[in-house]
Image (cartoon, rainbow, N blue to C red; front, top):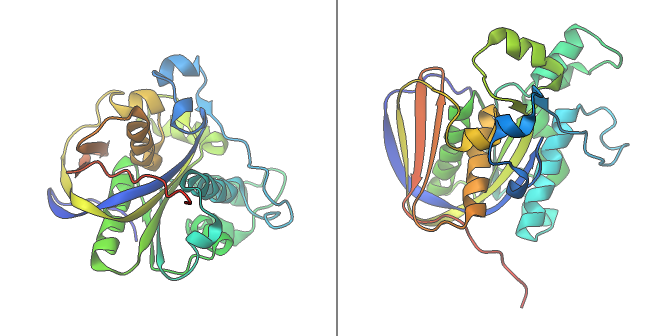
Length: 282
């Protein structure tokens, strides 16, 4: 599914609990690596890149960098949950993938070959989610959202709706954004003021308590403020990474996440702190 222009208004649903978060960015691994000021920390660098993760070279020999980053983000999420891959395998795990243009690099490489060739199937957004689903044996309901920060918020809300409807017992929300190969295209398009920070983030959501309110409206994106001041430009990964920052802060009570993109605004508000403690063996 594609995330397009949404009507103003909103909805209320059961708030999902956040079991675990795996965050990998150009700043480093986890929320603790994110600086207080992205522009200052970038020191004039336009792109904060992520290296290709050192995963099985034979298994992923044809997979482009964005696919392997998605697999690595889910591995980081499982490490945060202190669980193995079997915990999310099967039909009980739903899957929502979101990106603005992580697949742009493979499309450009396919159209403008620069060295190694890219297999045509990897030019589709579904290639990233497909690699992750295969690697972890995820066979539940799924969706793909395409868009900027507001699409990231919509992905979380869509996962909450899946849980409320009882279509699955847990939902993996995965966002991936890379910029290195297409930085010149982003600069030509304009509208992104901060450093471009590559990111991959996985959220493990389960049925929670209280309510999650989704609000939509119209408004300008404005300057770098809030979480974006720290994160830099992460597009669809911004709301997911913002949750990682909030959890790391240790603040209690309701949680609010705000996103704006191309004249649209989307906000999520949990009535209760959604973070679920790790399950430790007796």
